[in-house]
Image (cartoon, rainbow, N blue to C red):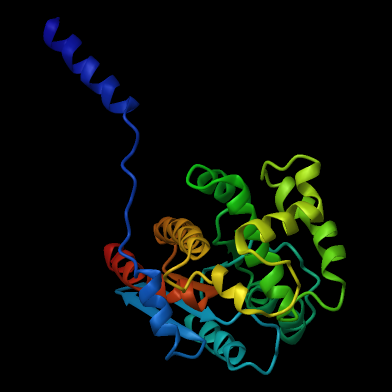
Length: 284
């Protein structure tokens, strides 16, 4: 009886112990930054072992149908004949994409991959981390105000000054977007903290100048590829959290699929290349 009781106790303890977190070998983002200085997108990661074959197209986030990355996405898709695909930036449920070009204009590389996936009757899944999960993980590491400032600069300001959101005045764009982009996914902003003035006050506090929605040297303080700045480090941490999620999804998908196609940003592709090769080899 005593031996049986001990075995049951050990079994229960083992069940209660959390599963060991998987660690994947990735490149440091400072190394990635140096590589990006010499490599033009798209960056192709083509990993295969036996029947397992994964192609990751590391893209430049743009919606120009003439960009060479889109022709390569189509070429690799036709050659690979993937059984499942993953994109960056959230689940793309839009099924009103009428052509390959239309997909590019509407959603960039994700739209291109969605059009090809729909035509081949395969699922294109979100390879990214849900905003709510990312916010929760990052808020455990960084102060809310600094994290919010970084996210606004990364997701709103930098794309805006590079023409991604059209000609709408930035304040109007911010006011329209702050709730669905941050509040609804779970970033803890009270009513006053949702106001445009809250963001501009944070910018003045931490950057030391008044905010202007134009390209300036101050934007470099939010570029995750730069080494000596606090907000750059926040950006690298964000990228690494998301990379871990993508790799976990690929790892799981290889249990039931042999061929996978992915479109993600070039920096992500360079960072996870070593891990991707290892994961594919593991499933061989």
